[in-house]
Image (cartoon, rainbow, N blue to C red; front, side):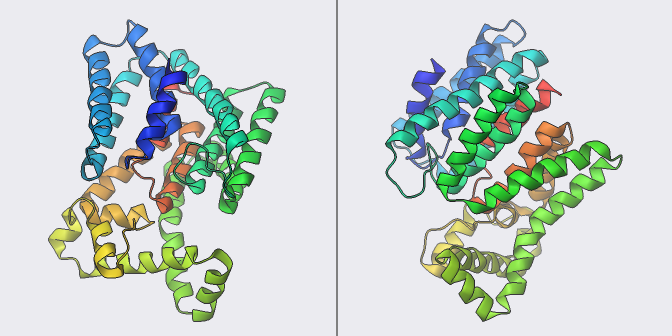
Length: 341
């Protein structure tokens, strides 16, 4: 049922502002079916989960704009998923994860056969988002599929789709993230190591942007190379940094309000764009208290095992592509947290 119906729902949804990804729908659908059949999940949680998606789909199909409440939907979904997953036995969560990864690749392969765009993006809204999903699939498959022949097929297939998406930075992530996870398993001071990695991810891009902004030659060279993509991201990052510096103490602590960063860009640049830096986005919109709380919860999940660490790193990298409220990463992180390993 989830294989046939949920992809159709998600395809409609992601083209109607919410971005509830295809793979998120498959994962949630499979989990919902198993949860409904499980005696370990209380009925109240089963009903709440079904009611949540019923209301969400009703709003979307009625073309109700939910962009301003989407963060609330994201966190409500995460809480419901957490409540359901913690009721499962570990081996029960192994099944929907494996099944979801395989189904996603199969249907993506069918979509690839019919695609005509220069950069393949599958069921996603962008090629970059699509490549990040596939990166998670490749790295998680190494944990869940122990037969080398089967894993090699998954790796080659996913790698080819990433190549067709035209996203070069994802290929770098495929090399460094397993290395980071390997070091994490060997050291004793894991929490310090994890916080260091997060600080590097948060600060590296803005610092590089500020440094390179001092050189007009460097900026122009990157504009020529990337078709303006890098220049746009750099410009937005600097604009957001300026906005934070102008905030009052209250605004800095508690934020300016939902979607304020986006509205600020629209008013100052005349373009309806996301900041392309969700670290700055949540600082501006929700404040430093929310930022610290959110990152702290994320650290709690990431440090559980190598799987949650891997997903968490890719999730943090996705912040530079406006994907903070994409439920795909949170869905897998919560499930692998309780699945263990």
